Length: 311
Image 1 (cartoon, rainbow, N blue to C red):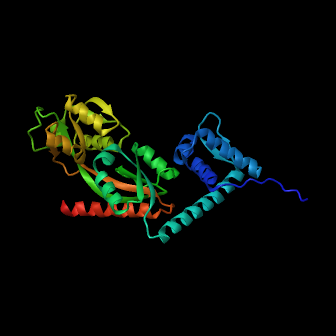
Image 2 (cartoon, one colour):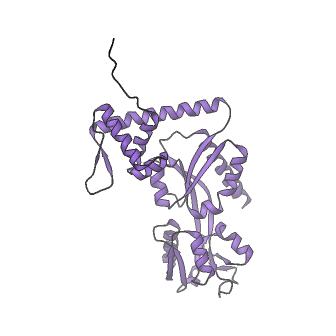
Image 3 (cartoon, rainbow, N blue to C red):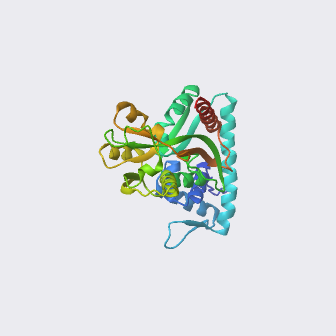
């Protein structure tokens, strides 16, 4: 009787986990992207090293990052090819049915995700009921990192920056406006210029948020200095702080339309032309997007162009 040696097969999912770990440099993000635990990610890596009798990764002492060994680099490159080929296969099989399906993982900031994307998402789901938008909220720096790492397919951010490895699709931007309590001295003004803001109590975004950086840059250019009362990382907290009288704030206009209609906040236009927030969709330039993701980009672009014509 012939003797057979047990030779476990490597699954596509294991190769994807390995690639996600290398791309994201994080066991946590690789686990989240594949809906497994961090310990499962470690076990998958150990299984690959046992299978191929090669050390693929090494931890950097005192740091969280992982580093590919020489063997690991070769394994990573071929694994990426295998995973990409399998994803193309899945996509080809879906397109044969003529149905747009599958999940699109989109990350965005609160002000865009809560106030600007919902109509586009509802329209997309109406057009392609078998597809799904998996939406998550994060900070811009994290979104860029996760898109580059491959753990997020698409990102929608404010003030998108050109960066190696990223494709940027410009979308319709927003005007920034001043918000204040209805009884504030500026509340009855239709428009104010930057100089009118000098010395006012301000509720601001945190310093690493692009809208805050743009606000600081514009105020500085006009020689305006404001009194920082508080800093927050999301639009909803800023609006509530202004409502209760902490101070005034500068925010994207679409994010305060409901409060303006209800009378909770006064919304005042800013005179200078530079008070405009650019918006863009980003994805990894070397990534082959699925049909659902491409359709979502097309819809966002068409919606943005239509709004631009109406304005």
